[in-house]
Length: 300
Image 1 (tube, one colour):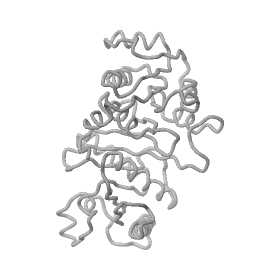
Image 2 (cartoon, helix red, strand yellow; image 1 turned 90 degrees about the vertical axis):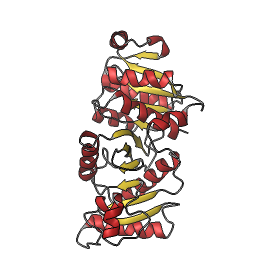
Image 3 (cartoon, helix red, strand yellow; image 1 turned 120 degrees about the vertical axis):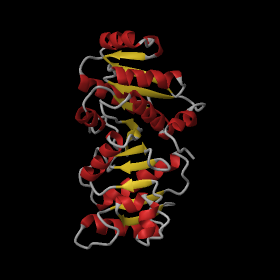
């Protein structure tokens, strides 16, 4: 089982290399991460962007441009379209966001003519956090894509979390459905949804995954709190996955974990025809490298 993000790299090494295509890949952080991924044998890489700017940044960072295939395109939105078409045409296996804004990246993925969302598909995002204060990796969703998931979307998100956890070697993931309290509050929709998901989990409708909810975040993550409240669930205090009720709460938790608590991260868009690396333009090269490794591990 993978318990540290750096172990993602070792897990994917030795496999057949996937081909990554990075859209508008002309910032130092993206190029550094992709360069490291190529050097480590994780992926082969295609860069779609302004060739002159890519060459300039590579020269400044001491990166050998010859290790990449470069597709020259200066418009950021068109870079995304070119990269998405390469995935559609079977020329690449993993998509990555470079310096382009998230909204343009997502528009390319969702393009009705050549995009990567299957018919009736549900697009979401899974982040994997390595928190100094937690005893294992923690998967979180959805911090970036669905503002207010309805119940059917939450069922899909639960599946994405469980599938990603299994890719990390967690055979039977423990999934906590987050709400304000571990008490069922009929007037609070997140609490009702959490109870319904937990019952579906009990009946095997969500696959081989342990589901509990509603659970407050402290109950889901801190064994002592769960024991004090006399909750004896196998999930409480030992969750592998947190399914948040909305983007507001998930993103706030994610930002607090990474910016205030020193968490390292990997993140990708899921529900698409291929894993799509989605990190912030301000994320570190290390986070981008871990995200590439996670996507490569998840790619078919």
